[in-house]
Length: 331
Image 1 (cartoon, rainbow, N blue to C red):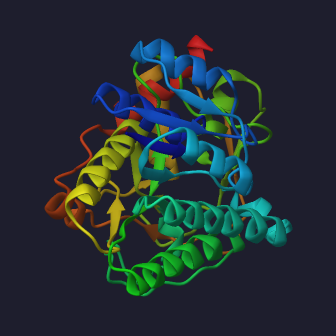
Image 2 (cartoon, rainbow, N blue to C red):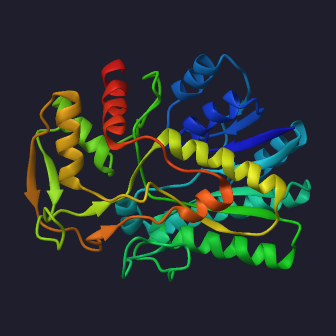
Image 3 (cartoon, rainbow, N blue to C red):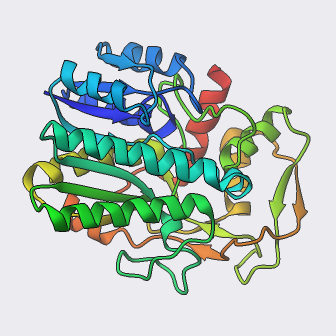
């Protein structure tokens, strides 16, 4: 009996694999290394001292999925695999629809074929669009402002309709806010292929001199320092949220959604200043124009996850910044 982790070599997936293995779970991992590296699989094994089956395949490949399910007794699936860059999705929306939707369809079809009906989906706070008020609760209206967010919203709808058609399914939709940080060992962290689009990898590039300056997009928002406010969560806390979701799925059917965040909002300058203070390094930055579609504030109300999953974020912003820098120093 095992948990299948799709995209298990990625940033959040690799940290979740570690926490699953530490908790005594058996796992099977599939990843095509589109936005990850084979070294992550080695590091998961090194950190945990445990081995597991790994398949270098694409989740859109139905034959590969059939082989994985026929060769392993899969009881649950955590689905991370998918394209995730907002900017790239706007430039190439068809690529995002083709990959993210088809991969999930292929996965759910294969699960159904093998009688595996426990599914944890890696969704996103992007399904709230530009929220009209904060903190954001799970009952707020859903919308999307980019193709990436649209794929997440379409998959959530797909999951809800699947459960409506067959109430044997146990599906948990996890809406992440902004994961940063790295494993305390410094052996795995956020290591995207190509040019990163998230704040922390860009801060790390500026701090190490790989990038001359970091651009802060706008300082005239209606926030205390004029920069956008977001909910940043340590990736290990996020990984532990997936363990809580698996345990929930084993006891309940349905298709609920849960926010995974800290419930606290930090501005872009808060992150930069805290990173500089904790790690005693400078992060050169310049103020640029606003980016289209950026909300002034977006942070979570995570109380439903605490009530239903028994989960809450424990790690603070200073630890997030310290662990991010530790990973870069070790790599």
